[in-house]
Image (cartoon, rainbow, N blue to C red; front, side, top):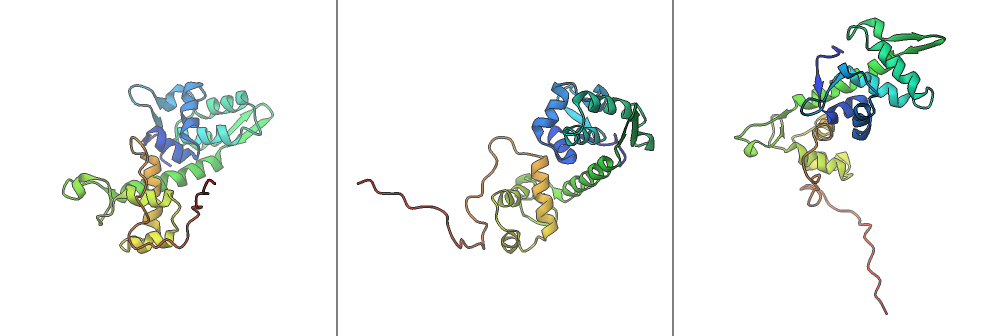
Length: 207
């Protein structure tokens, strides 16, 4: 990972770090991260390498105290971003290896970049709403179907121009770029889907 090269929104940082948006805001509000890893001027943003330390802070919560985790982060973040020296921190008798966190964050960042790359916006196509590149399929419509729990096979049958990877990346893009207001809910199953059963129970009749 070319750490520090990407500037991420809080939602994107949550995806890359593998934590919740609430946790991402906590690291700023509670001064958990060194200030150089994020920016609060205007909209909040994070350096991509900050996600390594965010992931570490919350994943190691059951093994290390908050003070130990913050001290390890402070020590590791003093080095130049991306150098191997940031991978291992020696704090007295305690040795912390950040390698697994760098690896997992790098994989999630690559997936996020793939999701970004497959989305396009063109005023000539559906008035500029985000669509999956090469199609006229709205990204947030596909993501809403995934969020509603529709099986991937049925989503693919409803959108035959898409493959499984495109559906998964559409859902990821929507999480990293949430729409303002209420999340979009599909009016019903995408066209081509059939409702096999319903869990709706009949109302009891008062006697």
